[in-house]
Length: 249
Picture 1 (cartoon, one colour):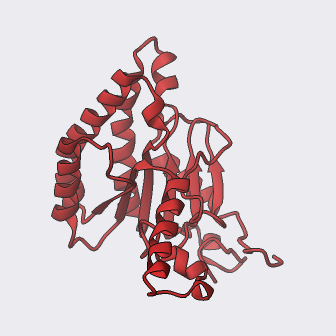
Picture 2 (cartoon, one colour; picture 1 turned 90 degrees about the horizontal axis):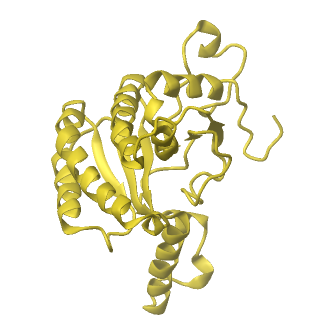
């Protein structure tokens, strides 16, 4: 029985959680949090750091295999220039502040997305974080930065097409597994649960291939207010789902 498939005699009936292996979160609502308080939008991003830390540490405590956070999309470059500049420096500085703590908790950090356009200072800090935590064996923390689901699929198709052109692969041999093996994180199977904050009912070009059969959970809580207890609430709701993958329940 896979994660999320519940039966009357499983652990849920004993009062414990059936924790999914892989969770992804669309962190939405920073701007609304700030605006509702009469603050600049960037203050919402600053407050969101507390949510990231709480959620990561809660994921470690609950024993998740992987947590993927949507930090900056390929579409976010369209935001006001000052906000984009702030986000680049803020993410660099947040890594400075938090990586050591995550490392102490055996978290392995990885970044998903295109490196193009990312400032060198931020890219260096990303690379340093990856190297520092490379050998950790606990939670796999994937930060989707300059990431888009369509861009990921385009990059995968380009890689496959190149192999076909070089004679290393035959078109007829291309399968779903082939595509999965050419995504940004080919070692991670599909996600079990996708959480979106701030009440929005869309996936926003996030992990389009990998969430094909994920359970969706939308909370009205805006990201700066999200904490480990909200992650647990999402997982509790997940425990009431029956995952059929297209079959009969």
